[in-house]
Image (cartoon, rainbow, N blue to C red; front, side, top):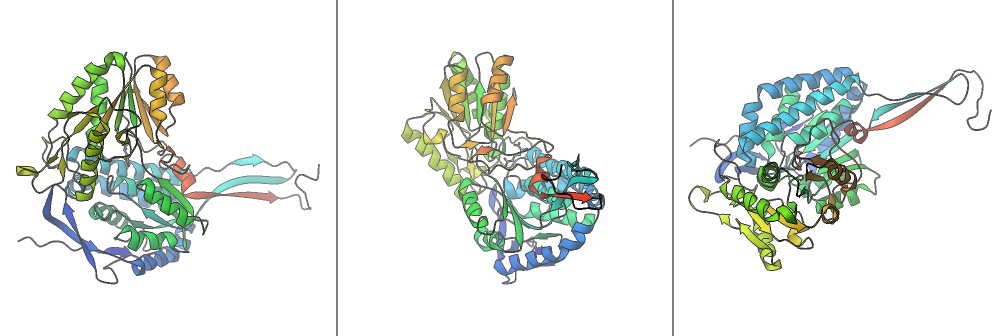
Length: 496
Ligand code: UN1
């Protein structure tokens, strides 16, 4: 029998087991008998040690010139490129999404690493005239301190990179706590950072659960910023925990994203987008298109084509090149999907395809579910309101653009929305009126690029963004500097 590799935390530049010695298995969701590795199941003591290491490393890292910090990131980017295929395969095994998508995930980490490396020479502040003579005024970015980064399993390398890279280039040090379902991809990223030359203590990695590692990190007095991606329910707890200590907190949470299909849309294109947005990553993206609002004139035709394509999707192990859609991440997630299918049926939505867990033959040992389409969905139904995070799409009829926008905005979330139309006026109106942080025209709700801000309105976020230049605002704070070279007391707002 092949022996199962054992992995460690990375604290202060050392690879160490959990203080308690406890461990946790990493299993393949396409074949849960397969144990891919054994990782530490850490506790508060490990979180404390990691924070102490991050605090110790802070001064030398913050004082290193940003272009020098960035040179390390450029080297990390090269390492990720060299190991892209290996990392993608390992990610498919631990997370389930198909290889094309895990390659994309690693690529997103590469893109973010290079993008933020470029920011090493570009952390612009402002130099502005002073209102007084012989006085100079400017602003510059400062690091915030030791950051706690808590990341989800659906983008196991990309999302950690969205947080780690801007944090580092801004001069912060970090403790990363990745999701327990996908430890290996976080480990691969941190190994690349180590190999690229990130000094000990600047990046620390602690494996474990939210309550045993995440919460102690959030509550730690020396952690100055928490960046969290996950559910809105957990984000709520993170926010409350951060408030008493006035800790910066960046939250990236749920979505109930929507594609609007107008009567003048290119229907094939819209179907492509709805399939990709609804069933890509098995629907397990915050940006997944879980609602499609279709104009009455093309409703039946769209629905026929969409359901036909959904039925034809090949489900299976993501390592198989012929597979379109992999498993759900774990039993709990799959149960949530089954539960929502039941809710949809109880609510009276029309099930047009899918609706069942797959458990025979090749599916017997994995967390598979059919791509599922509900039609004639009332926008008030729970399946049209709540985030499911699985391969379930609600198709909702509408009369015109106004009602589509109203239905589209009628949820508590505001991450991503899209419109398919050939009419520039409709496109611009929806672009203006959809209350989401991301908007697409003639493209699906997924596919954000790293150099634009990523995040959402309402209960999707708390006003911050990651990626793009916006990430620098999340991971730094401003210092305004006044240099008076008049040689005398000058009183702002008083002396004229
Ligand atoms: C997420 O779903 O949590 O835009 C992130 C996208 C990807 C990132 C998704 N680039 O769908």
